[in-house]
Image 1 (tube, rainbow, N blue to C red):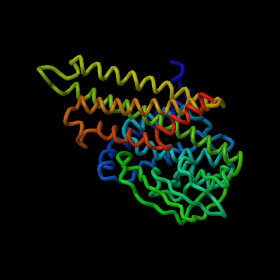
Image 2: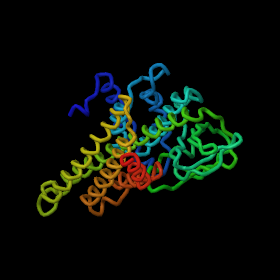
Image 3: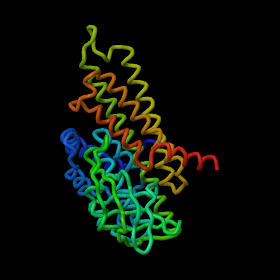
Length: 348
């Protein structure tokens, strides 16, 4: 399992995040989700841990650890809830794009100033110093003071920063209920250019790959979280004189879901290692993201079935994992768009 090994320093960081997830995230995740309350305290906790600079280069003031420990740590967060994981992913996308571009409010974003990543899939345009267009689903969009936007100017990529004049419509999305998701409208919004041309293209590509791999890591964690909840319930629930966990049909469901999540995990870590090595990780990252979200959806669906009618109630965690997985599916332009892009990369 060499693909899943971490260095001693990386393991220390991931252990810290695991403890944070257990002590800080887990106790409040259900209430925050049920009341659709922005996970401000937990987001601030991540900032205090300094993990927003985990994947940023040492020359820029980051830890220089790449995406592998980022993925491993996201699994720990995703196992409890996808909302905080999606906020972390978007923040890191902004950090890595700004670092690659060599400008913008990098220090503020690394320090924890909430930022929202608006990717190229939204089709926002830039002309005359102003942005035009709409982004349909943006985690942190309701609360972020800064938007890092991957736009186009006369058909060419441009990376810009917008802070004022942005229309924000909070969304009651199916999942990621405490991520402050919003639809953003840019109607002549003033913006500052950070990079153009090939510099912008490279910065945007770096953020996209981090996003695909990040969602993959969060989804793997969510899949494992659903399996753990289903296993616990099956061990405690008695049916026909014995625990559900002793029923062959239930055992097979758990084994099959774990097989799928384990396989997706290998793909996600492989894509992260390719990226950290400086190889072209685009196709691997998309494939890993697709596989991980599918595995999480399947695991959560099976976990709901194992819970029976209880699985559909907010008192149990599995219905939230399902909703989060379904919302992960639409991020980044949606799974079908990514499948089309993967075909272009693999079959060119």
